Figure 1 (cartoon, rainbow, N blue to C red):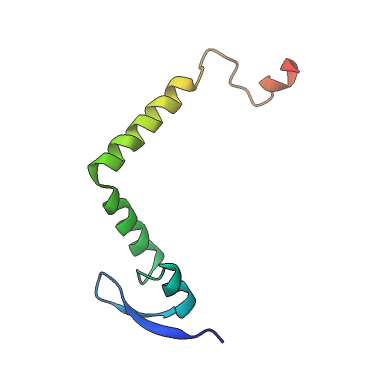
Figure 2 (cartoon, helix red, strand yellow):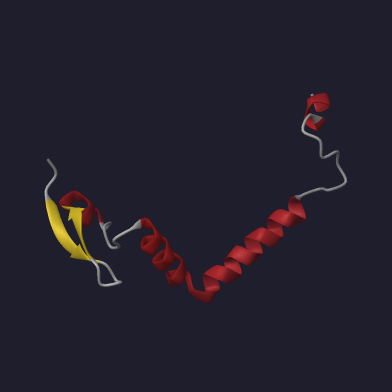
Amino acid sequence: MAQMVERTCWCGKKFQARVADVKRGWAKSCCKSHAAWKREKAKGPAGLIEKDRRIAARDDDLSWDEDPSWDAHKGSF
């Protein structure tokens, strides 16, 4: 059985984490939603700006003039 250690999440809740995960730098949050929230918060405004740029670049690459049907690519080979 894996060795466990008690950790405290940034929200204040205590939880059990595997020692191997702690050594990897994981096990910083009590649940996935808290880990995701912390990850998104750490990006700050610069991360949001970069995300907006990626979305804009993706939208520019899309060609809406082409046939949007599912099987449209089959005739191009």
